[in-house]
Picture: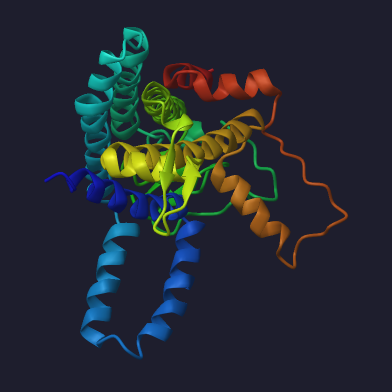
Length: 338
């Protein structure tokens, strides 16, 4: 029973890397398919055909269809981390007289994160329908490079407005499509991108806060115990001064779940922090991930003329770019009707 949180954290870490890699529909997914195809050709020599078929179906279900699996995993991971934080870290820190506000901060961030998670997963990302198609066609101009006028979606049988894309997960065209996020089981588009930004930011700060408090607790524990001034005798009978590696090993043997959780949240903070900075860059330059990836792919194609400098016609300055993302859908609707 004690190892259940460890198993959940390890499983979540493995799937998190895969989900972050292929969560952006169209880019990472195609790379994942190519990598899986190459690996499959090698493994097909030793793995039975039936097992290969089952594995392909499972991967298709996980990464190419809309599913609540990662939502459940998301909840399980947060529950495992907060259970460990509450029953051990919080209690020990309280005994060591850590400030109560600092200890309660992760719970306040969790409340905000859950609220943004619900809004992001339940909100309409900007699904294009026959009733709003005419107004959305006027929202953005075609840049003639990434978005061409007259392109019809073969599935929805409607002309694609500029900055829109058909999501293969949800089987709908989405206005100002960014990507499909498996963690919220919804597309990220014009109407819920602001919730996604706050959700991602609170998730990053939440992981960083727990990592900071846990690290402060372990450091305080080491200082109070006086281990830094001690020594130990190795297997050969030689005496050595206590080193960092010895301290880490000692803490892991004494508090295995706390140290494992700390390693997980530190790694998560680094991954989410990098991803958060990347999304901030996209927001400040008024790009979606889909557009960023599409231009990179276009630049590598044979049709790209390197003497032509591509200009992002949707960028209007930092303030206006942020305002476009965080304004409410009702304001967008009023703009379309004028």
